[in-house]
Length: 393
Image 1 (cartoon, rainbow, N blue to C red):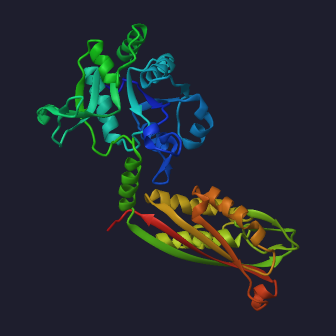
Image 2: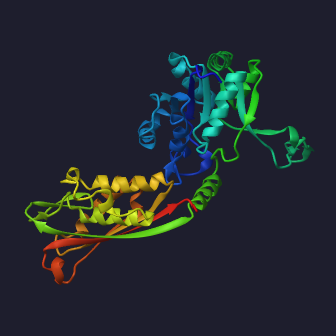
Image 3: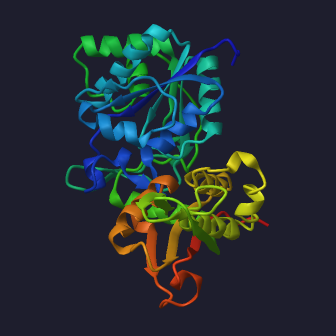
């Protein structure tokens, strides 16, 4: 494909996914801790040969869509129609002002599309004008009657399973969709079928068996298990931090500003809970400690908010292709009382770490008036972090 070819994407995400069972539209459910639509969109938004991603959504899903794809580049979403076909046409019309040369049309319910498949789709459309990814049929296929009796056994050597993204010259597929709508045809199950109806020859290129469409509850269960098996390196790290009291009127504890009669003596904001948690995560990664990444001798960390330290540690996990499984902090102090603030602290840690609150625990204990914490000279915290990483040598 010539580099001058401009490629855009229509991401179809307006369906309700009723066959996937309870839990809302399947494209907004999480799989492997990430929304399905985020995984699907990310592959296109980060591809070097794609200049625009046009989402097509149900207008009732505006808020959940925005939250699910936060951080990804895309065009302003356009509203879908009553059928997939109508939704695709809406997306194509929205892209028309950009005048792309090639358009890829992809189902948001296929979250595991690879960069390689996207590149092959772009190349095939540039070469042939219309092409779809396919994978061979490995099972024997039977054609049955209305009563369930076998009528025929087609040769599976000639059969292929069609996937998305399906790729086309933009002007050609837009005109085909417009003609179908004008003629009242709304029964096409994919864009290749519309192209065939319009008289186009549709080529095929190599798809990917992992690029499956999530349709049923069983699909979600199977893919969750597959993703979990890829993160079989389960690690646990521990952390500890302590800070003495000084002058002040509040403490930062687990990311929450807590009114108090004293403040922390610390180079940063002194948040012992987050500091211990950062050390625990870095320990699980075998990646040094908080002091090696944020040395107190560096003036730029003076008074720094500790949430940025935790975000950094989480990013180190993500960069390794890992996930957070559990975060736990234990505060050791007489005062302030942590119990009333426990869930607020859990929510704040979950927010900073981009994990569900069910994966965060905050506990507290006293030292029975013994030692420096018992004398209320400072606060200590311990933490543990369990992460999952891909196996590596």
